Amino acid sequence: MGQQSLIYSFVARGTMILAEYSEFSGNFKTIASQCLQKLPSSNNRFTYNCDGHTFNYLVENGVTYCVVAIESAGRQLPIAFLERTKDEFTQKYGGGKAATASANSLNREFGPKLKQQMQYCVDHPEEINKLAKVKAQVSEVKGVMMENIEKVLDRGEKIELLVDKTDNLRSQAQDFRTQGTKVKRKMWVQNMKMKLIVFEIQESKQKTKLGSSNGNSRGISQKKQQGEAGRRRVPNRKGV
Image (cartoon, rainbow, N blue to C red):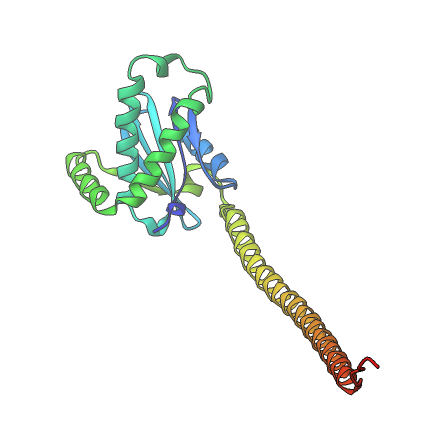
């Protein structure tokens, strides 16, 4: 299960989003915000289904924690994320800054924390499953309200979640990586061909140079031999 199983999260006071995080693009942010406007203010957990994804909310003491997940991620992963995020947010801002913070003003401080919690929950499935089971038992009396998102937003038509836009980006990225690999291979082949051509040229030059050197050596040797033969033929002269 990759990090894409949790695609978006935020923390809000009432209907005002204070901090949010996502690595993806699409209309899920708008849908999550619209659902936030419709949520009951009572402390509870709510889950809405939409086009293969779940919009999970935890409301406690006027603060709402949300995470959007792919449906195949199940229920425990989003629940564990919400509980961990609630604990960290309450510890950091409880009764203080969160009560007066303006919209998105905690993005810089708490946005990275949302990212860390998303990654941690994905990377530690066993621990997360245990935590989710315990939390589910403790809050079992509360129950979990689960509805279809079209009903919540009073829409007759089916909502198509544009995370497929993200899927397209992911697909394009994969195509780009594939094309990049092909280009690298092609460049490698061309580079090797060029190296072979250069090597052959150098070899040819070396052979030509050696051939010329051998020819010069033979010519010098022949001249030496002719000179020695000439000296042997010249008779010694004796004085009269």
